Image (cartoon, rainbow, N blue to C red; front, side, top):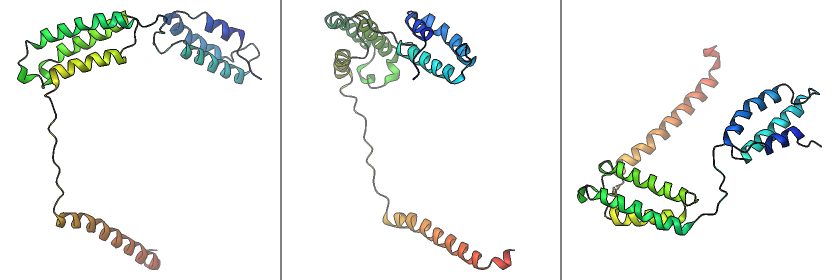
Length: 191
């Protein structure tokens, strides 16, 4: 039975910072390409590589910061209204008739989104989270509740067009089948 080598365990436990994890991947790939062990067993090297990559991914090699602190929801809820107030002040500069046109206020909305993300991260919370989403939804209701999309009313085409669109492919299919059968019976002419 295969077990991870001591080098694999040491490498995994020694990788605390993201930079060191990223720097060690090329070394691990070279190590596995050479067999991974002194024995030169390629299968063991590949298994060690899989173990190393799994360890890197588990430790957050993808760049995701592991959350070690608990989310301070009260701090986040205390700070988010400042983002909303700034967004509200910026939206006063935009004519209320243009609130449904995103191009008129996209920069303000981007700043609002970045502010809510920053405040959530400062409170050691993930973003988006249900509380931040609830706050953002409240802002949407305040400014964009009248921005309903116009629904297009689709109508069926006239019956003549539907019949034609159905019958043409059916007739073409029948004609092609007839042609193939006729040509297969007359193979002496084609040869």
